[in-house]
Length: 121
Ligand SMILES: [Zn+2]
Image 1 (cartoon, rainbow, N blue to C red):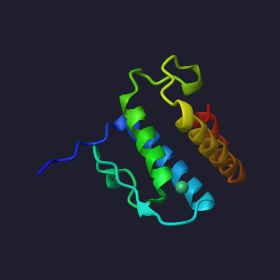
Image 2: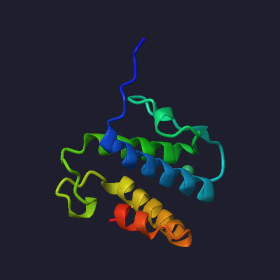
Image 3: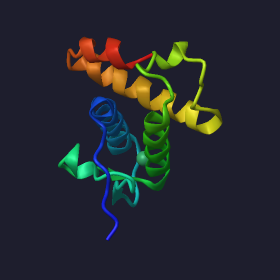
Image 4: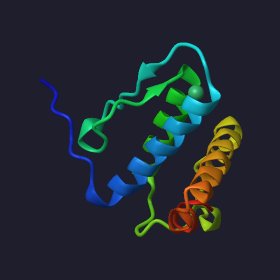
């Protein structure tokens, strides 16, 4: 059996946030059929124990986001806005912006400005 690799520690927090953002965005904005998110290279249950039901679009977006985060060639990772490697492009870029904007508003509502400054670019 193929054994899944462990998620690198420093990426864990980012990945968790990304999943949380896309998950709540989908929950609040999309209807229709959803399936719990799975991500092949890693066992995401290790990061998040709750299942995240996502529509097909958000599944694609989150898969892309996680893949790019793991492939990020910079260490430490700079703020994405200031990064030369613009890994989000086209449709994905527009979508992740929407997700970030939505999640940013949620964070403000819940008084989590600390997270906002840390994760929004
Ligand atoms: Zn969705």
